[in-house]
Image (tube, rainbow, N blue to C red; front, side, top):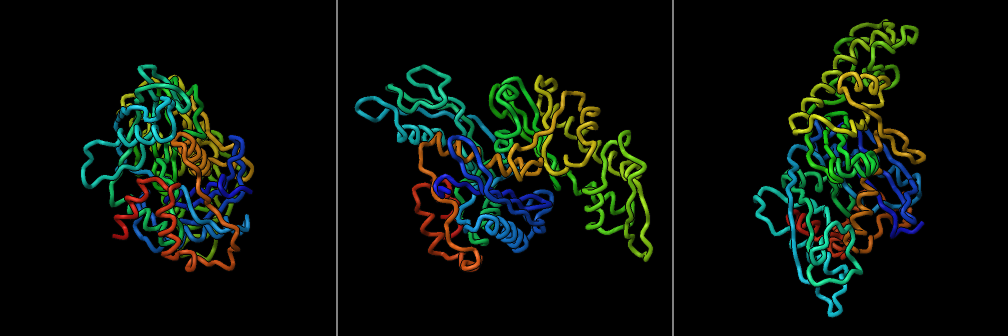
Length: 427
């Protein structure tokens, strides 16, 4: 394994924390290890308990480390929420080299120039996504390195987020003994895996329904045009089952995963299971058909809210239809119900890699591929995300040494934006 080409993604969700170790080789990804842990410190996608979130991250990281026998040092973190804003930006510079050949330094300078905007003090720049480069008036260029020119322009999208939310997220990662290699917007990362190039050109809505929130992002003309986060998700279905069957939340979650069905017409009356009710010693028996009568109304409500949000964003007709992903979509019947409610062509996006062929891993895989693209576009060398130190000999308390953090803080492979974040933390 080449540690320089190894990326580790960290997807912190309301219901679970997922860590994926992937190696990029020849443009293709190979999944090396996966770690999962229940998430207890988040509510509706926002961190409400830092200590619990840190422990969940540590648990997921340790599971992934045991799988590959390596120690995770740096992670690519996904960020999401209604505090995220996007706006167009542009920058222009003169090509610096005497022979007028565009190099990595010119790309770095033009991206820095695009960030010279008036940003409110309570907001922080997360990333700048190039849409196209323009060399001496010739537009539509995706990678201008090696070309000859005098004037280099970049048109792109600048993504900003609330400082408080971002710093809480980064604080959790730091306290878990990790450093941040990159921060990526989750819908953009998921779109790298879930949505094809043709769908992005035509117009498509990516709907990611997780435990605490549903994220709607619209892609058109080759880029993400808009996004919105709704504070409703699979946890609401779990709560409905818990109340309807008078059982604990843990039991309701298990029933949803193992016996749930989101489409009454296709649910079976023959599949039965027992439920331990609160205040009763005798378990009660229910069928999948009965549970579907609890799940379908809530799932239908979620999808109707998503449909309304797509129209509010100004997209009533999307030729590419809708793409579903996220953990809640794993409930059988979700796709059929979505086709009924959304009245568009709908499909489910599942990563096509061994060990992660479930919609819940779409963001984790997308974070790796998106971060790898960022490294290529900006022409920097990726820094090692894992080391060969044994996990057992390096517990989390040892890994969280200040000297490691300071060393990576000055690493040229880490973006300047990360240095700004850490400066706020430790000054």
